[in-house]
Image (tube, rainbow, N blue to C red; front, side):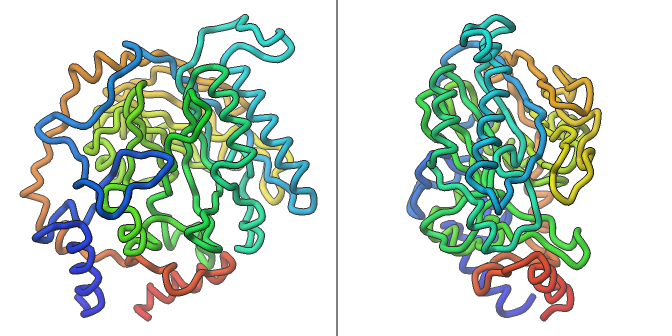
Length: 395
């Protein structure tokens, strides 16, 4: 282990308030998620202890959940305001459809029942393109902003929670663009903002993603918000909800479950979540919502079917059974009922022999370390790819 690596590791131990290296330090913690991030001096990491974990009282015994499999249609930088508004309007229409109360029916609920939680995929508002950093800063949303306020109005009208992903910016992180998962509550306000934990590096050949994740700025993130905010769980009156846009990351999903997540919303635009959601539910004994995108005509640079699969959007129970799933690769909605109160009363965590695994996790050194966006922000996917290749060479 290099001196730099040792120094970073010691610093993180100190920040976490840990007296010795261990799994909690290496894997990071989560926190009570809210619109305002907790301070670095916040309480210790919130994690399940002998089956007990932090919650708030539930407002009802069971909840109705809908996952909307919608198109990806990227905003046009040449006509940004109009195309952004068109995407927001489409999102609002889909929310109305999920609630059975479309405008053409006079706003009355004429089909189905009230939904307590509506889940959307990673980029329903802005879409996805290999934008430069300057372009992404034009596309990124303010939180709160007019787009989230419009969605908040729907959440307040229906008395529900609405979860979706977006590119976002933050005044405390100039020029950074964050891949953010957002939950808006029944008051119409944002109740949780979950940064993407990390990007999968080395997957795109000569290119790499330039959206900032927790791992990209880990030390500063912990200094600002505390370890408990690195893997957040929103403790709401319909259950403990976690969101992630990270794909193929079983250890991350397990840590979120150990933090008390009861419902995990998995949003990865460009790929089916069905199998991942199923396995995650089974292995961690939680409810999962795997939200994929539909066939997407007219998305610049991509074929209509890019990332759309017939198994795309599912809701799974803690045994990994499909409670609901979309029937095709078009825009569709999967809906089900979750007995959240009964689950909370009877939940049993998988027994994880931490003492057995701690030496391996403490000694393992990943190929790509944290903090790569602290010194210099890559401006393009090509520059990000060069950064990844430099790490592969050990520069």
